[in-house]
Image (cartoon, rainbow, N blue to C red; front, side, top):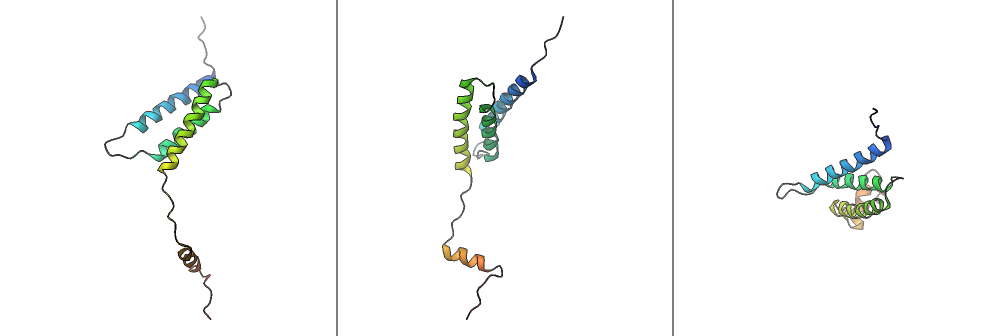
Length: 105
């Protein structure tokens, strides 16, 4: 009697799906008032992209992962801190402090 050997590529796919489900569960299980973790959301998005690129993935799974990856990417973008805009004069003055100041005449 022979024991069936799992296909290594298929095992990798299953591991990717399992880890994605684990990450998504951790993302949703937050304490009261605790903000969502942008790093975790980014990792979830990358896992979804990886699943969407699997060559042997079912077309429905691939399409679903692509759509979800776009939504998670939007969520990540929304959570990232926005750069503080400075007025043009303030940026100019900040750049001139590094020894680049123009000599007064």
